[in-house]
Length: 274
Image (cartoon, rainbow, N blue to C red):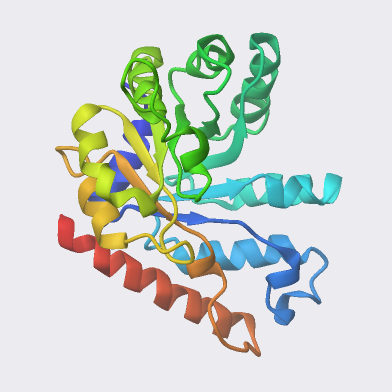
């Protein structure tokens, strides 16, 4: 069976949590108390990890927030990855895909060099663009299916000549492309009215559900409708709603306490489905 999937499912059951913490760490938004550090973003990330590790089962690193800062950002990404609890699932939110040979390089970058457990990818270019990722049968590959942004209506929710919607076609393809349980999909929490139908149509796929909190998605609905028959197989990602708590923090301890409270509240909400 798939190693990454087993690891996170074990944590879901043990902690009774689906919480994935998104490390969308923006230097302009981190509290001033971190600005004195030699590497402010890295210290901020380590602080968030310490505060959430009892509640989270996964961490999602949005690579754009690190790539935008060049080599210094990539160093922070590497050291953040190494700071994650070994039992937690590590996700590179990179949304990669290209012609097959290029995708193979992307897959090697994130699965071999960085050694992430999971990666987000885009399906637009079709099967040959995603096959290099699915070839890693001990990892998880999350394919964008029905996303939380308003622009999802431009393509994902368009009806095809076959009568199905584009995201429904993607769903069917991903079910065929996956191997050894490594296939997953990204479904936005703002689409909770469709989550039950998607789960019914693809009971075996692992779901990554962003969009709770700042984007307005429902935590309760996402958790209850996203899980599989074993109360596993789903992650609810929260980024800004956890890592940027309101308030002025005179110390790192005070910041971590505020983050822990928010993560604990979300964790408590999720426990009702177990």
